[in-house]
Length: 107
Image 1 (tube, one colour):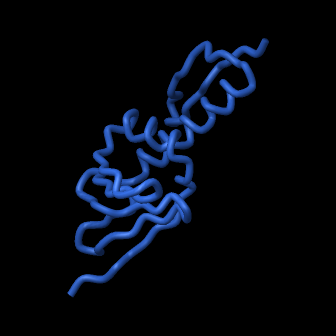
Image 2: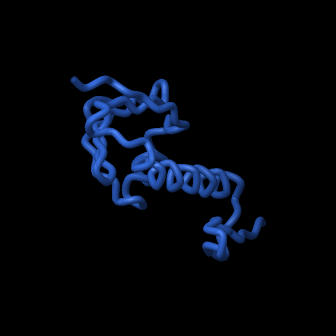
């Protein structure tokens, strides 16, 4: 018998989330303004933007499969903030430790 499982995320901004879906290649379907059905790797779940919670069935839900989406969301959130401040991105690289390094210029 399967159980409902959840994971808490910071995914709460619809515009940034849509960019993260695109960047990460995550499949999604909008169920309402605040709810999405998402498929990442071998996992399927439902995201509630009001709470940031992804919930699914323990038979088809593996929290680690959603890590790339969360990473892309964080990057898109940072890029949105840079644009808001009037900065322009000069480069984006991934260092040997797997960290995303963004160089930007203000003014």
